[in-house]
Image (cartoon, rainbow, N blue to C red; front, side):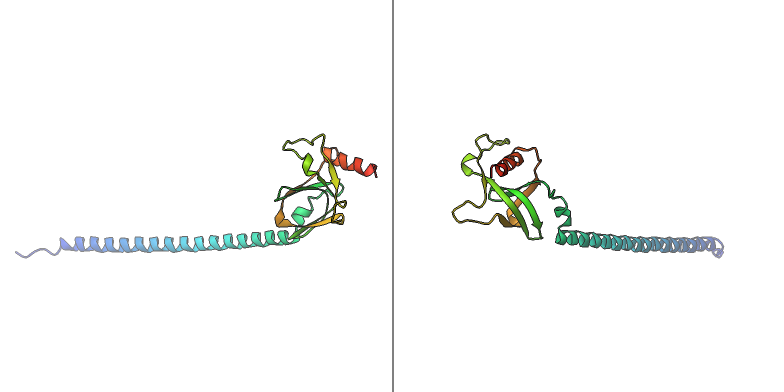
Length: 169
């Protein structure tokens, strides 16, 4: 008796279908991977462009100092705190990327400064210009030497002391 070829035909066909199914699944999977890579690259490129636009905008603002200069209340006095601990009071009249100009300058006499948050009753507010070296009443400060600055309230102790000092002249 000869072996039947009928029984191997369905197995062969089943094998071929399995191979075609596996090939189709591999093609679909490869297509999904390619699609995901393309989409990811598109999103990465968009994110990079958005990041670049933001960096350019920040650089432009820093160069112009408009975001800082617009915060100066020109009608008020400002306190400028330096990295060496010195504090000057006056009016900031100009800001650049690297420098700050302050005019109408006052400072507290070192002998009368205190560590408290209140203006000491014995504080001596000194007008710049009466020192031995005779400085002008304006200062150009390097911005990297300025820790921070702030606008002073008109009814604050320093602002009131400056007004009183000006009245006595």
